[in-house]
Length: 90
Image 1 (cartoon, rainbow, N blue to C red):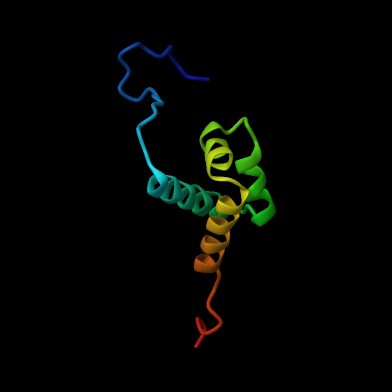
Image 2: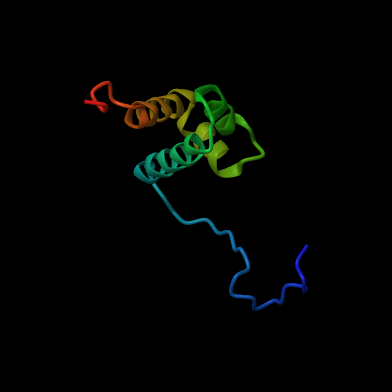
């Protein structure tokens, strides 16, 4: 609980907004979200469910507009990129 009430002109107040974006922005945003949640311990199945859940408007919009195949491809690409290389210990 905050020690004081937030003021209307508080510079630290969270503000959400939408911006125009295209297919490349969808891919970059999806990749960033997947990386973030991967680092918090989400596995592939849980990442896919995150995009399917309408509660999460941004990720769900990508799933609804770009489709399951797109989301799974980006997730798989990120998982490959972040998995340890077999030669990493050499």
